[in-house]
Amino acid sequence: MNYIVHYDICALVLYAVTIVVFCIRKRVPCRRNKAFGFMLGTAAVSCVLDLLCVFTTSETVGRFLKMLCHVSYYVTHNLITFAFMIYVLFLTDNFSGRTKGFKAALYAPISVDLILILTSPFTKWIIYLDDGGAYTRGPLQPVCYIISVYYLLFGVVYTLRNRRMISTQVVVSIMGFVGMTCVAVVIQFFNPHLLVECFGGALCIMLVMFMLQNQDDIMDSVTKMLNRSTFANNCMINFSADNAFAVLLIKIPDFTLLMKTFGGRFSNNLLRSFSEYLYSFVNLGDGYYLEDECFALTFFRDYDRIDGIYREIDARLSSDWKIGAVDTVISAMFLRIDCPADASDVETVMDFIEQFKQYSFSDKKLYYAENINLYDRKRRFDVERAIERALKNKTFKVYYQPVFGSEENKIVSCEALLRLMDDELGNIPPSEFIPIAEQNGSIMKIGRFVFEEACRFIRKGYAALLGIEYVQVNLSVVQCMQSDLTENFVNIMDRYKIDPSQICLEITETSAAYTPHIMEQNIKQLSAIGIKFALDDYGTGYSNMNYLLNLPFKYIKLEKEITGKALNNEKARIAIESTVAMIKKLNMKIVAEGAETAEQVETLLEMKCDYIQGVYFSEPLAEKDFLKWAESFNAINLKV
Image (cartoon, rainbow, N blue to C red; front, side, top):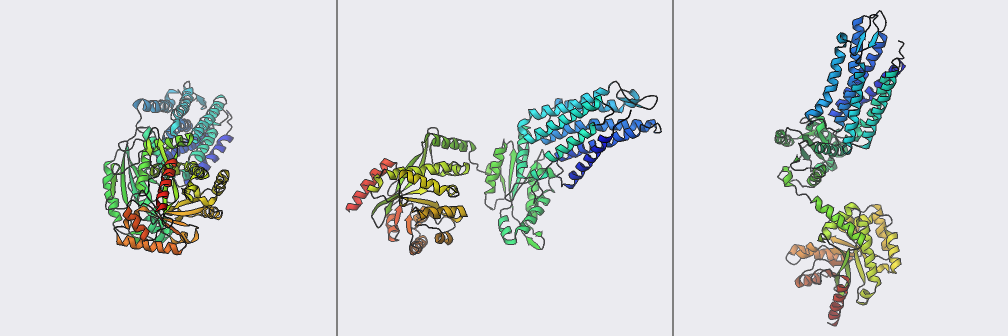
């Protein structure tokens, strides 16, 4: 038979390219990469043997060598689809913990296939050489094709059944592999002289190489450890497979200080050096860099090693760590999470990690999951739904807390405060729902709602008749970052025919400390049209003079904890008096928050505070109640 070998030669070129690329790229020797390497090597050897089978058809070649080449080709060629199935299993990291039935279905067919092939020189079941030394198919040769198709279908069924554990890209690649392989097998089965199976296999493996073997998607470029997304994906796979495992987190709390002190190159070298050290305790596929100077090591069935590894790492860090010419000492904190005992899903694991990242260094170095206080994720979900309901049904309520003017001796303004009263959850404090709203983006709608309610309140005119000069509205840092903030607020004020001077927007000191261009631009644009600005919670953040000088604040609001100390703490009193004097010289007004007693109010008045706000005067009140209260308060005080 005259064989057409051009496709085999092309296949060899494709395999050579794939092998070179696979070897050049630095590979983490995890199970997936090892499985791919086995499949690639088996397929390449099979292609070489296919060509040798053709070249040994000459009558001058001995029967033993001919038979050896054909048997070796069938062994390697039939191992390709089995190797493919193993690779699919490792793509989901779901090879361990399989039932005996599953393992029998996986290993039995290939075992039968190999036995039939290896015994063919004696049985002639799969292949044999006729009297003339020519290659001949045996009566059971179709069994090899059937078993190959079996593994391809096995891979398809397994992929579809585990669809939720793998990405669309993986599914498409696997289906493409199966489809192209089947086409090549069918063509060669009916055209034995046309050697296209190896070429089809080469195309399939190259497809998998470039679609599924991209190391940049799974590795951190600096540490060369698996990255955060890979860690989360592997956790999800292990949870889905009911595999028990433990995670040891290692955090370097003082890394930021080291980076500022020695620079970025030093910090990258430090991360790389530390990651290489951690790899001495686990396989390369079980080490992760989770960003923010936090590492993770995973352990399976060898939990007893964790405590010893912790002690060894801690002992190593007690001595100098040399990076180039610099000797430094690294401090670390550790957290152990046992899964599924401590966390039964990947979301909980990631919640533990995020909470642990926020911990400050203390004498205690090793923490357990039970030491970490997680925010109730169900509660968070419920609050998010409550926010959605309130926005949809417009059930948010705006309350108003009065602000007393010391010079005017009356209520001169009020602060608009949002309240959320949910039918299912009851009263949800702003300290709980505002951070959630900022994180999920709903703060934009909430902020617009509060601003519009304040404008509606002003438009009615009752507040102005009572001497209320302006309404204070809190402005979230997320709102400040919106490029269309000024346009939106101007449109709302125009609709309600509100003078901008009747609005005062409050920004917290911490937010003001981070003033990117868009935020600064919004503040200056709104100030230019007449809106007042107040710096809220002054004294709790950075107390940076820069934003006091550069941003157009008219009011500075002293945080209530500071004003609360002024009564009993002489140092606090001196600090407040000095702050008040400085701010007044800057032509700004002082608003003291948190006044609860008459004695506090008297002290704040003595310190020349321009305005005072607190429960001594009133709790935040609903609109009608506030107007009624303000009317009574101002009438009494003005008479006096």
